[in-house]
Image (cartoon, rainbow, N blue to C red; front, side, top):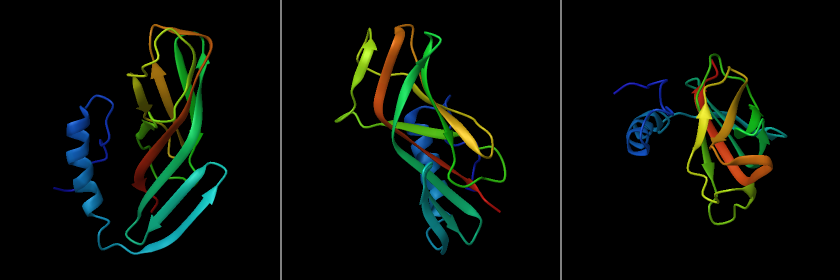
Length: 144
């Protein structure tokens, strides 16, 4: 199967995304790294075949308008087109404040631009001043 730009997809199940992501990652097995680095906005790896992986960890999601918690991520290096961010939460070390529920089960990545994405947690229980720390994200796409 060829690379799918629709993976990860917030509408997919985790199992669907993992299977498709394995196929996407297989394209990197024989690719040579041509550039990698760290900026204030996270880490990146660029491959000679045009693929790029960006990651960020840890970040804190903060309450916005009593409806969601979010972190606006500027990628450490731009992609040539929009990509989907795939968020994660370090459940062993994460802490929550001002939440009515302490289980962030609605963590999602929002499709962003070529230069940035959004990590968000939606819930009806978001209160003023709520935060979730030790979140992160990965974005995979083309840089050339």
